Length: 466
Ligand code: SF4
Image 1 (cartoon, helix red, strand yellow):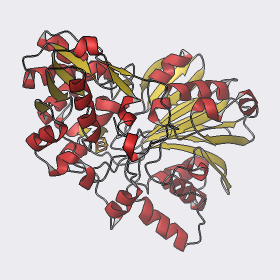
Image 2 (spheres, rainbow, N blue to C red; image 1 turned 180 degrees about the vertical axis):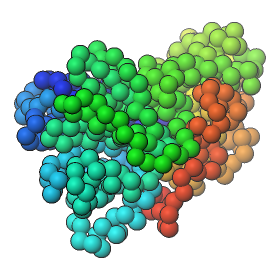
Image 3 (cartoon, rainbow, N blue to C red; image 1 turned 30 degrees about the vertical axis):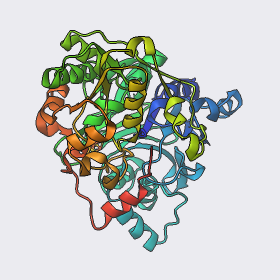
Image 4 (cartoon, protein in one colour; image 1 turned 180 degrees about the horizontal axis):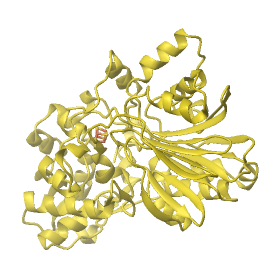
């Protein structure tokens, strides 16, 4: 799957092991970002931060965690959707200003970051990073509001787009979610400690109970006085990211009130109803195609078998070989199981086709392993538009479905047949009113508009991924 994930945020209030639990929580959110990781803690007096490039295990050791005392903490795993992959852009960001120290972690993308940044720079702000998140801190630092809380509300009121935030002051944890609810943010409890996190799988890992989701447009202020909910922003139409269910979130999480595993299995069931075909075996492209393949196989009455094996040890450091031996790049990640595929009519299940190059290599590989027919089934509609709300997708020109018909794509990937889940099928699987989900990458219709030249700016910020 060529999409890079977005970011994972975690926050905890009221636990003596706040840094250690945040470290564990970030492990559970590692799939949402592998470029950098960071933790900030507060002990009632002072904030401290540690950030490093790489995955959580590489970024922290006993010594660095030992240097983060306090009963409050926030943490972040990052994949860059705006701003380059470098340490300056790693989160949490920590600043000291007239309102005192503050640290912030952000999942999502702001659509008016460039506009706000230009204005702030004109008024003398000096930015340390290329990240849209830093804009929020500058707005906060410039606020003349009387209290920390009012200054936070005032700064968040100016940003637009997708944000799930965990904010730390010396004695408060503040969680905020944009009024559209693009990205998930869950609230949990571990004894007397409160936790906020991108996905409920992080609560499971540390033995915490899920309480509820932070609501779209809600600000939760957690302090020694307890938990307080405020809703300072006007209500907006909901736009939960449907791609969280299709691909991003872990199947063991609950996102937007639904089990990801259930939704993903339903995507497969509905796909089988919509475009079933005579075949012998259903084979997922691991790992992301597995849940949908289970649903497809159940509905079609076919066996599901692991006809492709993923090498889990191919890390970010994999060096692309020269052109002459490049075809190994898919092989190093996936290898076919000849005993399952030989002589079979195979339904190959994946969760998307982006450029088509990887799908083409996989179809070829499955055929070379002896499959008689390969029927490619995709558990979401064709991806025709990029995301501007925090998911790193290639630009429109690189999305094969934006410029090619389904039959052209089928020919290109050399499959015997190709079918995608319909948009109606996707909406049925998430079980939602049409209006409560964002489906822009499948429709090109965007729920939050881009001011001025923001679209071009974000397009530039999007990285080309393979
Ligand atoms: S455009 Fe696609 S990936 Fe982006 S928020 Fe909407 S549904 Fe999610």
